[in-house]
Image (cartoon, rainbow, N blue to C red; front, side, top):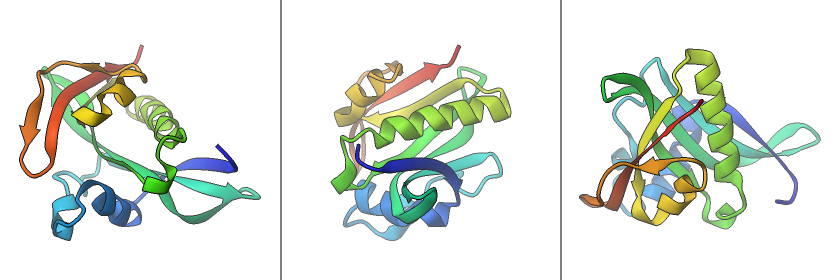
Length: 153
């Protein structure tokens, strides 16, 4: 990666445009609004480029984490992970995931995370310690997915 980057906690409005453009192109804007986006224990994160210690430009990568349950345990569900097409494959998603997982675990004590990962992104999550726990399934209008989870130790 060239330059410096930072991960910050943001509001939904800061990342909504990126989320819609990458995950729901051609669909109505409302299709990128997810259940729980405005809940108190939902966290939104973005990666920004920095120059001289200051954020410059728009978010390059984003993700949201909603308090949920998995197998009757508190967990955080990852939703809306998106990276600007010009920045994909440069480590921004890894940077965001590492920061967000640590931040949430330290702030809430919850160390279990899960998501519905697009089948095309399973390797990305697998390489970061996530494991699939379902067969492939289809989300209508979005495509094939697998349920994946990660538990921090």
